[in-house]
Length: 270
Image 1: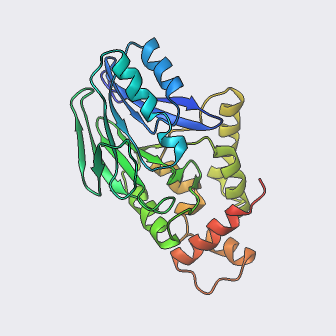
Image 2: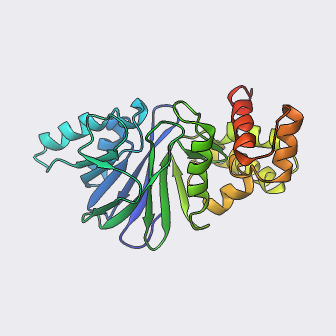
């Protein structure tokens, strides 16, 4: 998929289920969360692209593991060292420019400008990058997935709800670029929560067909996620009632509902 004739956004598969995102203008490229350098180098070489910038969302190895090798590869070619942007509140040694909420990442080649969102929960300092071009894109790492969200390894339910609300409040047409192909298992859980959600049932068939063809199920859109993702639907009566049936809850505050929903998902057998 592409923004226009100049800016293109592509996914690069890595490991078993990771996606590394690449934004390019057919000459220069930005990569997001390159956990593995090899498939990035292959793509850049095949498409004759110069890597200028690396964006990191959080510190986990499957998101930063390829950065050092990419920098070394660029150096071996005599290419200027790419700038590495990442979260200010995480200790990531390869990051050269540290970012917080509302910071802007203004890149000249390819010409694009990202707004930074603080989205802690999966990790303590997780950030996302919002690109408002001809189309809107958000690169959200492991905070929001297609029909799911990240585990709470370092943050609290309240933090994650706040982070998801920031993403939920982006324009409906925003393309959601998450970092993993977890969609089919996420849909199974979502259907356990909302078995009569017709949009979700339709999405299950679509996602199955895509995966049978070896096609990624991402990106999706914010509008789509609001209709099928239980973690963005904690105020919906259908989600609340399902959580109540699964486990007694003291109140129906969205943070309470989310906390029980996330706990349920953590032990759910897809």
